Every structure is written in structure tokens, then in C-alpha cells.
Image 1 (cartoon, helix red, strand yellow):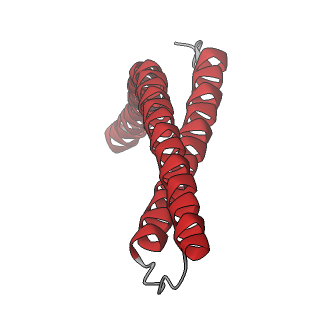
Image 2 (cartoon, rainbow, N blue to C red):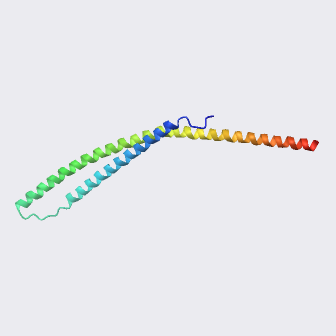
Length: 144
């Protein structure tokens, strides 16, 4: 039995792909979290306007600011949906990459177990041979 796992190169490739997918997922989660935080901040700012309106000019300014804030909030909500979609795609890519490498990892574990078993059998065979040789030698010495 070959001591080297014959699919080791493919397993390394799959693990690199899994690491890259994990990195992509982490980036997507970070972007999604950042957009959600900006959206929450915009919502807080929108609700925290308790300015006193003293003239029609200030009323128009407040209305314009609220309109701009609503527009920004709509943009942030759109970005949040895009970020969540990207995150879901990255999660699926990571799961697929993990699935591809798990099967090879199990094969590698089985290969190592079989190699270990073969080594133990060979060692036991040598020990049995040594024991048998010593026993025969001792038996011949007793007869002499």
C-alpha cells in the first residue's frame, strides 16, 4: 500500500478553494453588516429631528433634508438587499467548497488508517518472527 495519499494534491486544492470561499464569505458578511449599520444610523438620524420651525424657509429646509434622508434610506435599503444576496451566494459557495473537500478528507483519513493498520501488522509479524526464533533457539538449547 502506498504511504502517500494519492489524492493529496487535489485535497490541497480543495482546501485552498474552501479557504478562499471562507474569505469571500467573511467579506460579504462584513459588507452586509456595514450596510445594515449605516441603514440603522440613517433611521436614527431621520427620527431624531426635533428642530423648531420658525419660518417658511426653515420649513422648506427641513422638508428638503427629510426628502434627501428618505432617498438615502431607500438607497441604503437597496444596498442592504444586494449585500444580503451577495452574502447568501458566498455562503452557498463556501458550503459547496466545504462539501467538496470533506469527501476527500474522509478518504485521506481512511487511507491513513489503512496505512497505520498495515504498519502495525508488519510490526506484529516481525515481533512474532523474533519471538518464534527465540523460542526455537531456547528449545534447542534445552534439548542439548
